[in-house]
Structures are given as structure tokens and as C-alpha cells.
Image (cartoon, rainbow, N blue to C red; front, side):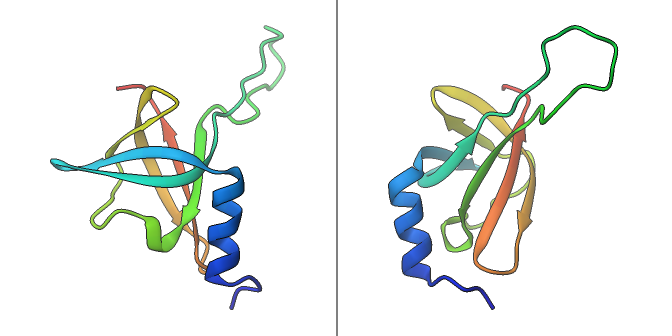
Length: 102
């Protein structure tokens, strides 16, 4: 059971989220999600390095488009990307890993 309510989650996304287009088949939906575009070390050393090479979206589970799956196309900040995984947290939120520009 989550601590926050559905209204709390909606308010968080209204404050920090941005518009994302998600395409399932021929249907494109607009959702609000928090986007983190990921970070890769750029010091060019041979030491272990990737911090988080893939971007992520954080959204409410109820906002996940019906039929949304790995491989779907999304557009965020003008970049066309692919969904790599959809990870539900069991408390009303979803982490979507994205990558590979289309």
C-alpha cells in the first residue's frame, strides 16, 4: 500500500512532469511523465563507467497507455525513442526505461 494518494501522484507529475507522446500500434496518446535522459561518463577512461546510459520515464500506472509494451515508440523533448522495459512498482507508479532513437 502506498503512502501517497492518486491525487498526490497527479500533483507531483503536474509540477515536475512534461508531455510525452506514446504510440501503441496506430494510436498515439499524450501522457505526463517525469523524464530523466540518463548520463554516460565522458572522461574517456577505461575504468568502469556508465552511470545510467538509458533514459527513464516515471508516470502513474493509470496513465500507462492501454496495450503499452516493450518496443513501443515514444516522443519526448522532440526525440523519438523506443520503450525498453516497463517496471511497475506496485504502489501506483511505473518506471519506463527508454533508449535507441528510432
